Image (spheres, rainbow, N blue to C red):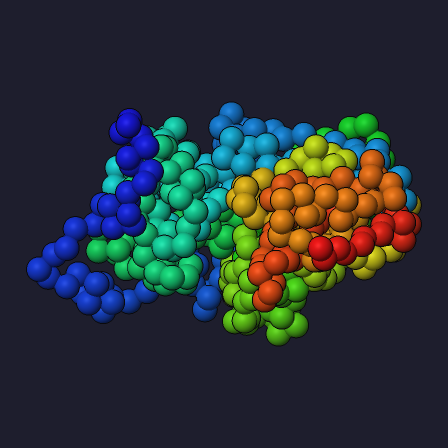
Amino acid sequence: MNNEFLEMVKPPEEVHGEKPSDSNSDDILSELPLVDPDCDPEHPRKVNFSDISSAAFNIKTGIQRTPCNRSSQLSQMFNMDLYFKKEYLQVTGSFKERGARYALSKLTKDEKQKGVIAASAGNHALALSYHGLLLNVPVTVVMPVFAPLMKITMCRSYGATVVLKGDNIQKAKEYAMRHGIEKGLKYVNGYDAPDILAGQGTIGLEILEQVTCCVPDVDAILVPVGGGGLIAGVAVAVKTLKPEVQIIGVEAETCPSLTEALKEKKPIPTKVKSSLADGLAVPTVGGNALATALGLIDKTLTVCEECIALSILRLIELEKAVVEGGGAVGLAAIISGKLLELQGKRVVSILTGGNIDTTVLGRTIERGLAVDGRLIKLEVVVSDRPGGNAGSVPFKNRKASPFLSPSSCQTRPMDNCSTIVIKIAACKEIPSHKNSLSVTSAKR
């Protein structure tokens, strides 16, 4: 058994390397004030176009210039000229690399030597760890205890120190800030630090360059919204060069933090519910992000879980792209029918990331099929004797109704112990096929 596998299966206490201490360091840390000088809600800092231009020049050799391709099938399906900016093709699988790279490059010599710290359950942690390795900057990432083992392992493979702390991202953030103060590490906010906003804004510059080099101007850009850093940076970049382009923010309906903040013109704590778009589940939009974005966003809207699941399925089937829930909300907004005014227009949707857990992906595909009317679930009562279920599930058109997989079938015994109930998931190609499916139950 190799050492790499042993590292992966260590319990949480060993993964982050913390050892018990006679002194209660947590109590000492809890007494320290939580102050992030880069993200003071009382004194927000706006990012301007020159910041984004500087970021674009600075990071151009350190990140991928991702493609922005037209989707022929989805353009025809929704009657619009639809393009996808494919940020999931960055090395660590998300747009977060842009801001992380720029933030690390702007550190002072002393800050680079001491290192940085951040709180993240996924994409920001991966991006910071990877570019910290490339730029020789020590990185510590504090992740909630529920963080996926694969993401923990990847961060460690990039040389980052991983600390598992807290049962939610807010507690992880509080610990990271206190630990950073104690150790002299600079805290890097993943969605509101000015350098992060500037780095994310470079996506807007690339979209205008890539799309308008071949066709007339872009009419609208759909931007996923979590903490607001991405839409703030993109809005500044695009509106400075092409003020007529619509900037439309898309949130999961389970966490409409930007929508609420725009109403009050200040960050408003929002209750967060579980969502496929877990990367967008930021309860309070960033103060710098909101101050930067005010007056530049044309519209915000929210999308339901069903539309997110269906958009992930559409991207897999038609674009051959595996995209996480947060990255698929732009297409979900189109699918929902809330953007009919964009029909006949040229629209770009940013696919922000592709780091979706494989177990979640499987369930999401099945949910998308159900939303699309292509998945039927059945219960059949059959004999528990050998051969008792033979011929019990006759389909009039077997070729059009294949079982999804053996794992889609579940059984449970009946009270009389002589029969069982089989739960079956069957997939079909066209909605009208549902009427041709017939099942008979047998009890022998």
